[in-house]
Image 1 (tube, one colour):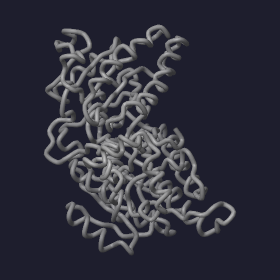
Image 2 (cartoon, helix red, strand yellow):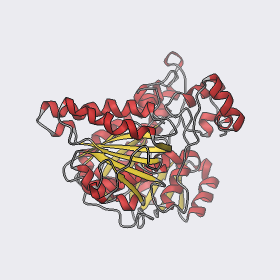
Image 3 (cartoon, one colour):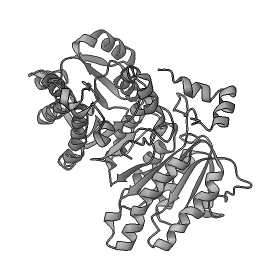
Image 4 (tube, helix red, strand yellow):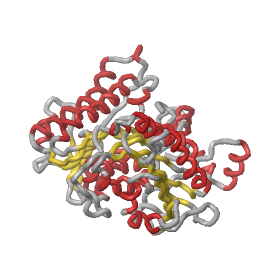
Length: 451
């Protein structure tokens, strides 16, 4: 779907008019392109006084060939200065060493000059230790305060940039590379102000050019839109894909499956025998399970019919639970597998006229959070991705004024693309992403809704 304001604001005449009137000036976001070899296309600056910077430094040369430190000679790197350094594409700040309130000034000391030296679409990752992991009450408070800092910085950074906070658990340092590869690259274009926790994970990516090689993935609701983008991205990353959608979408489903070298499964996931059908359709089982299928039936609660309520609950919430349980019981979801559920910021913030949809998507988040410890016994991770305003056929049908509000009410002043959701799903599907489970990541450009 074409965002005409975004196109106008990035034209020569548009830039002048938008600037003169003080209107939002969204920057076209950079997204991952085929043939790219390194996550960071430009200069990277690393700083901070904690121990995590050393772990991150081991991956720097695989991220980019332009690395700088905040102190001359640290990690064998030259010092970056705003006066002489190149424009910065990525920042890593290790805040794990901040344990007293007076040390928080180090955030300003590092970021103030760096922010002035940022290029287009910069990426920022702050590394820290989970507050609950320390018995020192002051240190815990200091580490928790970083959430306010990163969320505020996400609203100030502009230029199409984003900011994330990663709490790294003991033993999870080896999984930092995969996290940095995602969050410092254009794959995280529409993800900002997220707080995630890494734990220890023995699984590792063997080939970063095809991180899902040898894996078999099932994607529901895969014939179009976000589901199709997820299937394409998983296939790009090396997975064998199995695409599922309703019988009415069989032609589109089979066409996409053929193009991706996969196969299609046409079935109604709310049918009484859906669990049995799915088990029979997956004789070899799957390593990756993506529950993307979902519907909306919008009405205010006062006008909500039984059919509108029940159909949304059955498709969006009941089906993922029933089908996942069936695959587990039949041994079709392999050990060390990855389950990704598509939620929504409506399930976090609520939305007018969407009580049924919001309750279903909040329930999906509940599935991720509450199944995590159970599935973890088999090395299986389960996480939720919560999209905000994504440019799809569904959002194209929204009235113009509401659609424009949805696009602009985020730190990036634009809607996301199906690819943005797909990249997040593909990252959660990687072997090393077993370091994350029971978590929710918003793909919303730091939406103001539910912030």
